[in-house]
Amino acid sequence: MTKMTYLGHGSLRFEASGGQVIYLDPYGGDDYGPAADLVLVTHQHHDHNAVEKVTLKPDARIITEADALKDGRHGSFDLGWVQVDAVLAHNRNHDPRCCVGYVIHLDGLKIYCAGDTSSTNDMTRMKDIDYALLPIDGIYNMGPEEATACAELIGARYAIPIHTDPSGYLDEKIARFTPSNRLLVRPGETIEL
Image (cartoon, rainbow, N blue to C red):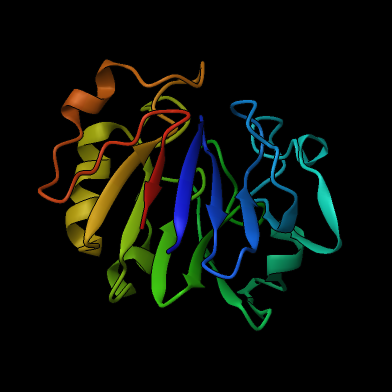
């Protein structure tokens, strides 16, 4: 069974059924114990790229936006046990030439990790997403109302609000994130996907 731990802010850990570990945008929280097979970084803002918090396995890969975005094209990475597709991420605070989101294909699931963004054209083309992780802080990213519209547009089985407050904690904004498929995961909580 695949597990996801919401570490806080925009930081997540995924544990595959085969035991492989993925970290996304390490920064929030302190639970970086399991060594990583893969680290994904959506952009180079300090609150998304604290790779030094992660212990890497000897053959671990780190994929950053610089790897995922070449000549304006979003790349894909097939590691055998996981496939990662980079997608568009941007807003007034995040240049699309320096930021990406990721769709992670893991254990038969499709997990959309939006990164720091507002609504994008790529969201209209997403199909069969199981989990959509959307930032809703309304300061550096879209607010909860726009994120609700994006969640409805994407149509994932579950939409999970992350990056809810610049301080990294869940706050009252989650009450205004109201898609019909909302799933609330608190910082430090692990769920089975």
